[in-house]
Image 1 (tube, rainbow, N blue to C red):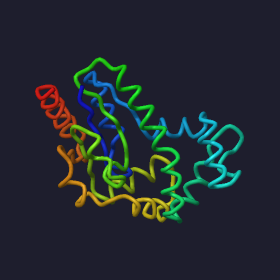
Image 2: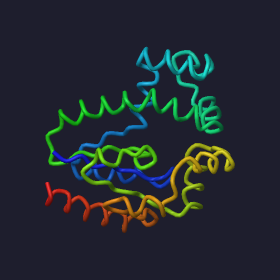
Image 3: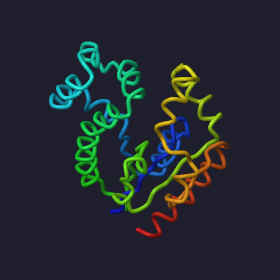
Length: 194
């Protein structure tokens, strides 16, 4: 079985592309969703995150996402430490999940594959792109974040120009019907090469 990474900057539409692959029958693992769950459910992660960011990192049994984002996106060292707690848990979970799948390939949706130098873990990588302004507007509509906060968080991700040469496939996600055709082409290529 092949492992395919699906990545792209904030607001590029990774989840939309992941859904298209799911509709084609491909098992897809969403790293961000899983990380959020594990940050709450794992006692070890919870303890380490509280030690790193303080008691305000949790509000009862929920992750205080706005507090965490405000802390880590203003301090690259904190972000790196938080990723050092969460990413190994997610990797272990993904590997266990992937072993249970019965399909020629699986997809791991992950926002920062290249930034974390994890590209060698994947057999192929699909990069989702969209113009920066389109991405900002999508995020504004999606979660009501403030523009300055979005741009601040985007600065922690590599620009598409740096990721494109490293990707095996690039999906420009502006026009949904064209995007769907591109996803179907990639799917056929991945099945043919499995």
